Length: 279
Ligand code: PDD
Image (tube, rainbow, N blue to C red; front, top):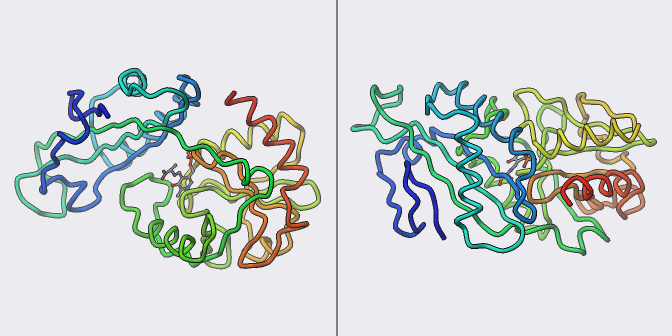
């Protein structure tokens, strides 16, 4: 695999990271994951906007323009040598300092890394039967709107899901649904869609934004609002969304069926439009 490392394109296994890199010592950095279907990037501008906003919030100044990020993503696809659908991973850290200290070091250059991979799309069984999930307390911090590489909360949530043989862990904070381990969550009741509003408690997912757009186009009532934890039990449908999981129906939560226990009609309609968008 050819990866990007601070201006160079190198074999991934030749890249060496300094132990003084702020990403390694403090998780002081951000990442992005974008999909490309048959060589075409999906919503690249939205990914770039989210990355640039995060970098500005963390005051990491790369000097890179939106066009520079787009070129990087396209170069990754071009050089990967992969056929078919791909994912591009980008990571930016504050850079490698000369000593360890929490506050921003002076005069460091941000570390910029990117790598391509094959995109693993949802298997047919997820589309026909949906997936199971558990709920778990959201133990993360208060700036979940930033896509930081400090992912321990998500790591522990995802591991808990794996150990219970399910696909995702829906996180709950103060009696509200926040998001999955690495997905956004939607609920449907009586034909109306709702999803937690995009504030500091969740990542503003690109897939989430596309689903909101599609729902509006389809004329389906849709609200961004607080979603109470107990709405998961009374919903007709629950979905999770992300770059790699697309729009996936959750048909069992904590061992109990959601609605009929099968992917519902609103999911079917929205997913059909989503597949057209990426197709
Ligand atoms: N995860 N919420 C969290 C906490 C996430 O980590 C992600 C994405 C999402 C969905 O965002 P999007 O639709 O932009 O992919 C929501 C990526 C894919 C990852 O960590 O690999």
